[in-house]
View 1: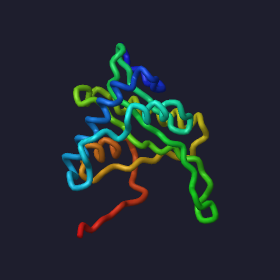
View 2: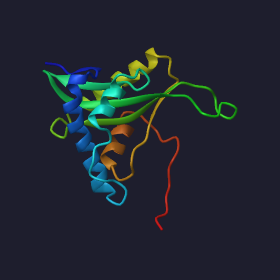
View 3: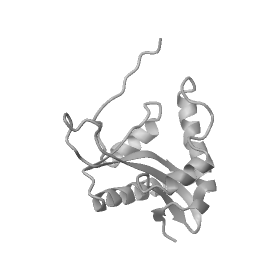
Length: 156
């Protein structure tokens, strides 16, 4: 059966929590100086996110199994005196279950997010990716994303 990407529902929370653990582990392994082994949200916080139309969450569902998620946030610039007042759909997180990677789950989620953004009048779709996650960098570049700003640091 095909992968169906749809809005996440409350009953998807346990599967989403497991995916959040997986993505956190990737970041923790890459930057244990910055990341703790924890989930980004509690189940209650996730429930509130799912019920907020400003923070749409999508899941890739195949035969009732959740294979991935995409967390999004509608954004507008804070300073429209300086920046053009455009509507952006920021992808806060995409995760594909480690057992489903290479099966076009991530592409399916991303394509769905692009269609959703277009339907909602967005000018662009943006995301951040950690430098310690080269697999994600390569994946996003393959999808045609290009860097538009770079964060830098000096550890003291």
